Length: 239
Image (cartoon, rainbow, N blue to C red; front, top):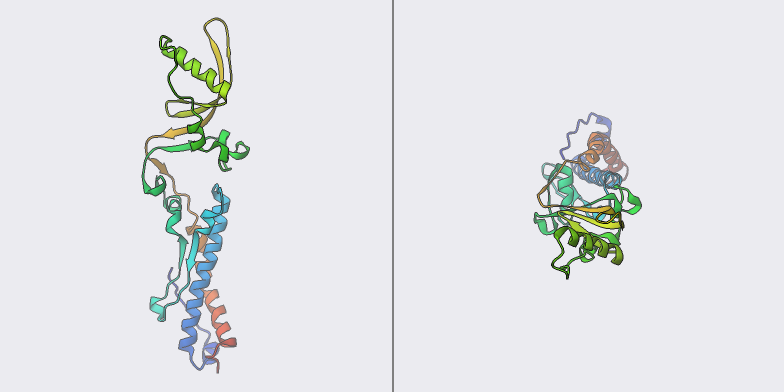
């Protein structure tokens, strides 16, 4: 973030016995204030636009104060800490990564596992992908003479009876209802829980930081004047 000042308030400048010191402190405070306001705006954007399970993401958004001595070296910073690396992908777009920055299969939760069946809500703890995988119907059907289709049907009945889950290819389901219809047919109702994407997922940019910086950046001049007047009223540099 760069600051460009256009100060024409000569009477105010003449009111300092040490304007250089007051100016440095004012610029330092301006940068810090702008960073703090940007952080506040960024948190608002994240809360509004993203699904949050807890406060981890919000607490990972931080700013650093400007504490350098010379104006040319002064800078303040705002952004997400490294532990919330996924926010960079949301800001810039790119490939969604697993924890540990490793790419690989990613489980995409459907609305059926989210609170209130809303895609804007987080996944319910009891329906995390780890829980679904543990509850998947596995193992071989004892009667090996059954054809493949019959074995699949047997797993469906087992999932319904034991309240477990089934996997079909890259999709996870729960069985809502299953019944025989006629001699060789069944009718089954499934609830789609997860889709496992084996390829890398390309995330579209969803900026939360750039919009947060815009207003503080526009207000830099006013923030600076406020800080300078504060120095004139209370600082030791006043005449």
